[in-house]
Length: 292
Image 1: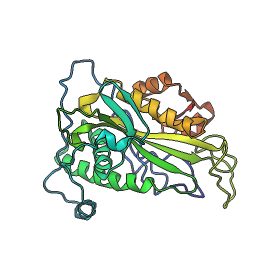
Image 2 (image 1 turned 135 degrees about the vertical axis):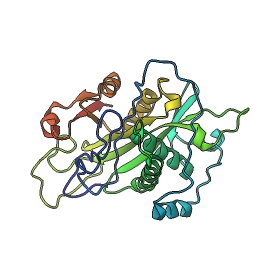
Image 3 (image 1 turned 45 degrees about the horizontal axis):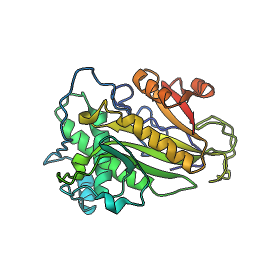
């Protein structure tokens, strides 16, 4: 997803605390979407419900629907048994497990959670169609981003409910949180991601060494699972993954009005990159960095 001319954040969408107009803030023809759920929520007690994903029977978006059909998704597919994931890196806490998504149905559920987050609280007669369109596009974008390019790698991290031998749970009801974690490389003369520098038109991009960094995006949690430490533990998993790859820093963008998100990242050790603040005034965001 790296281009020669730009390595700047693509502000396509924030949910609840930030942007909803993804056209205005588009920087490149990239499919990256940045979403932060309102996992601060309200302080009232919520009834814990299984994640229910309902896809409208009809849709005005036929081309993407056909591509989904080609993907051969099974929406009644059961969760992947833990014994089949013995070699996968994961972190367990409470009744949940953080790990990388491994099957298409998990990618789809992650995409749908992001769609729900993006359109949450919006009253629109076509909201179901909008959600489906968003989810279909994000599903294919997730799969594209998994392809390594110029030293960049992107992983879709999910939080799933632990396997219960007494309960048969589908993938759709098992995935309760998601984020994207990518390994990127600074461009020539950059000291932080997206820095406006006078780089040559053609420059070498190195996939090793101190110019590599981790980048977190698309963090969101299902409504039924909020305020249970899921966002914190997914971030912990992401930071540990960065560290295990010999990378020293992880970055994330957050809207300047998103105080709950800022507090979450600060709790995890992220600090504002002051040198980037003046360049992000128009986008109304902060760039935060954590030393892994």
